[in-house]
Image (cartoon, rainbow, N blue to C red):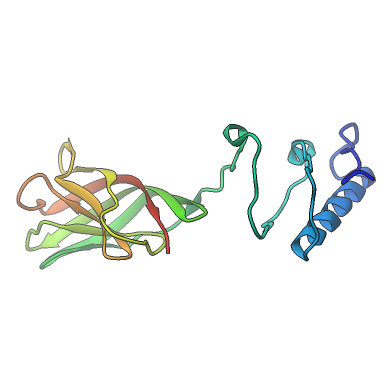
Length: 189
């Protein structure tokens, strides 16, 4: 007996044939999750005809025969980072132009583009919160800042367990409008 009947690719998405096929697929996945097993299953792009999987969880090791063809999808999520500063420098009037992350297992890729106003007493560090707590320290990331012109920072690295730290290529950041563009990858806890 086959693991699954062939997908009804000639039927319209949402048709009774697709509903039966997805019910059969769901039963097979439930079997796997409750201790059953698949032997060399082959699934060929079930979502191409309108079907989707929502939050599936597979315990144990999953082997992909062609990892180069594995598509994760566009599951980038938005988050609102907090921006703080070291010393007596303050950050206010935060505008988030783009702040997104993608979690892939124990890794988190992130990108952000924000605008903030720096006040108080000029200082040498701007801290931006990350979407997940990280494991370890000193994960390098790419960052740029603009206070009249785009500059590469002196350093851009994760600091502590929840923030990325940006240090200017001068002694301190200038007070006023600051644009930040930062992207990176880090291991999550």
